[in-house]
Image (tube, rainbow, N blue to C red; front, side, top):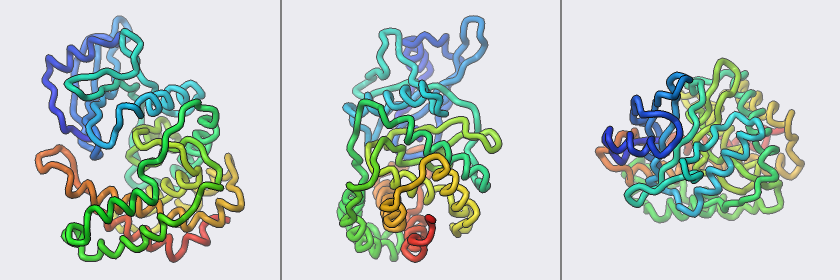
Length: 323
């Protein structure tokens, strides 16, 4: 999340007026993330107090044709009891609206905070929630191809070029060869379904050790379920300060996931290589974002070398993580 487009109070009030949620009380820009403009919106309901929502304007990496999938998946999972925010439809019943050529959606606000240093118990709760999401989304009618798969990551790094990559960090161009190896990995025989594909701690809301919200589904797609597990593992199981792997946290997440959906033997055998590819996805996307993010955007650039180090961990240890 971020703020690239600035909307005035009058514009925001007009937009919120298109929904049956009460009058606008306040709106505050949200700085985290790199792809969309987001506001935390408060409205005054009729007799039910102040209500909160997230207003999103889709800026980058979002194709208009994909919004029915993204927003429909939210509604499907929410209806199944998963801790996922539902889409607020406007007065005409539409899940999103167009404003100055850009799509906007109003999303339910869920309580909770995102952990900065997750405990093993919190990692376990996320592993369980992810597995249940995989099972409950199995009969969702729509599909979407993964546009940030292993071959796409290689293409991004190659498009950046070694000179631009080296300008971020001299060691970054060396990641092109591992990305090429990941692009050759075939996961088509593994169990597939609808995956979040970006379940970082800042995309999970928790109250204590309970998951209250999985949010920001704008990279969701239909792909290998083990890829989603590996991506979540790479995002949750390294210390935020030292970037060192936390074995207690990592094992808790994997065990809790498999308690709900045990991995097949083929998934276990491939997990280390899948995790390497998952880490390289964020090397590539962060390198691309580093150069694409405007200097005046209300957003902090993220270092791709953080995930280059995590790739190295999986290259050395990934084959032994899943029992």
